[in-house]
Length: 240
Image 1 (tube, rainbow, N blue to C red):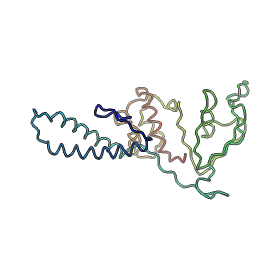
Image 2 (spheres, rainbow, N blue to C red):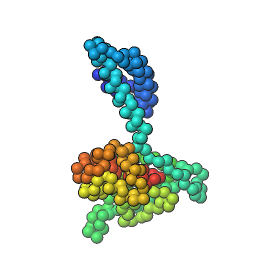
Image 3 (cartoon, rainbow, N blue to C red):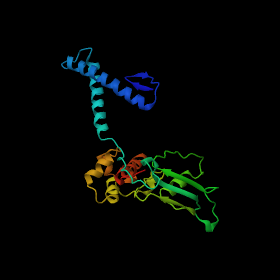
């Protein structure tokens, strides 16, 4: 469903198809707008078409702004190919993370319960695409922290491919930020060898504009802080 020009339009398709169809429609609409503006570029201010001219001009400006934005849109770098191991015929077969009979407890000595009732085993390969679902407190975030190395299992073991790195963006990742620093301070401290211009570009691709990136974290919204964390992800050239 799309609301545009004070009209409601329905699309019976998935989002990917919608984007394709919408771009085609916008391209045709832009031709019509260009034709109208060219024919009526010197309208009398009292003309009944002046209101339509202004509306088309605003649409044209918004269209151009979107094109500029898409040219520098946020994206992860394509991962480099990893070397094949024994028994691995394709990139999809490459072992990334192997979880073997893990259990986790935040403090066994205090008698705290284990997060998982039963030991967990799972093998993640390059071709793996998986979602983790469960009720609150089931251990979803704990499991993700375990396989990304942010915490370590109490029992069992996790082995990872030494040729890859892993990115983790969690619900509470923004708590890692120093609220007295600015977004640019955070990026410079995290990636001291990278040019400041490159760091600024990554921030801008996640909507952290020049006016925001120099503001202290404590004055940014939760969403803006999340964008700062997210901007740092492509800088690490992560595999998954």
